[in-house]
Length: 231
Image (cartoon, rainbow, N blue to C red):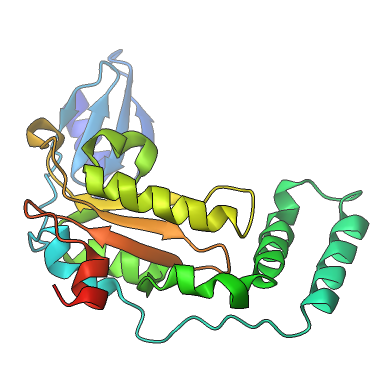
């Protein structure tokens, strides 16, 4: 039996995984029914997935990110809540890794920050969003969420200025730095443009949500100006 007949037989039986040919041609990996990979890296039969998402600039759809309900910042009984979390950490740290206590440390940071919420909340009057809204946007439109470390060179000067203002506000609340992410157009890497006109997202110091600091295009339209200044 020839190798291709063997492979066809394996695929027809849905034997997904590594298939070793008896013909001396090395292993053949049957990834799925439409894809076969040889030892030398040759791939046959792979069907290219069609991206059916609608093409939009981030500035055109950023409003779909906005959380229609204001995040609840509960500042009641903070001293007792902080005491409870610290007790959990103290007892558990002898039995589990730091990684396993990540949730406790995250909540502790939020609770400590909320002690200053009433004093500094006016500095955080940005639109808010959450992870599911971000995922939904990128699933519907040809956009992707990326870490700022990989795309810092594509941020316009106005985004840098807005981020600097936000970081100064955060330093009044807590010492650790906010997580910064961008939503950019999802181009093919071969034709990817240098200017990405991003939506700028930063994590909140008070809870598990993000602030939308801005969205840009060629006219450099800032979200804050659109909302608060009526421009």
